[in-house]
Image 1 (tube, helix red, strand yellow):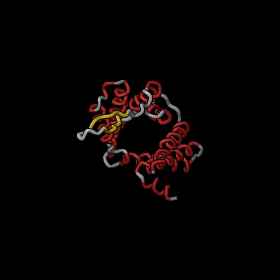
Image 2 (cartoon, one colour):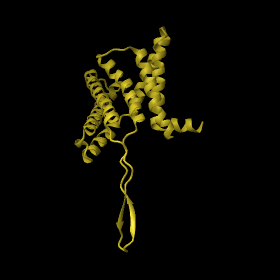
Image 3 (cartoon, helix red, strand yellow):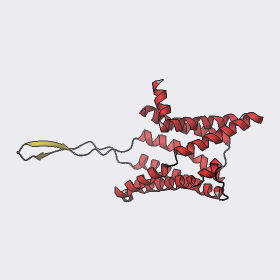
Image 4 (cartoon, helix red, strand yellow):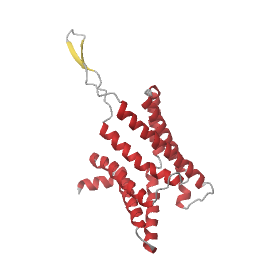
Length: 223
């Protein structure tokens, strides 16, 4: 019970909980009619809106990742370029979506909301494509983990001391495969919203449940 409390009180854990409830409401709405379906659809939309506040400032983290990649030689490898494309697209998605938050809240409605959200979802689509490509590239082309190499050097008093070179670790394949599955599930959302590949509420709800459980499990393990 204590772990459940920690999970709910964690910002990411709470967002994943709301996302799971939203996806279950979406699935349930498919199998109901009348006022019950309306209430479930309303709950789904309100939960989706509440989750937007959790990612309102996520563009800062995304652009921070871009800055770190540029500083640390992210342009010197294919994986680096894919990560740059991913985090740049995510940053543009978050900041473009933020422009319509007042419209979504009903505080200040604007005629350009649909056009801006379409552009935001296009950035989201590109971000997930870059992420999928990056995961595949790292799975098949990442260098194996190198063990630490010990070397000897002399100190000022003439005694030898051992120093270790930093360990270069490749991303774990299991984590990359998990990320690939999550991104594949989430990719259906912008495709549906953009009208490029409509799949229906049931398929979207099921894939949202799967991706939420997979990402939520990482938070559960952390807390």
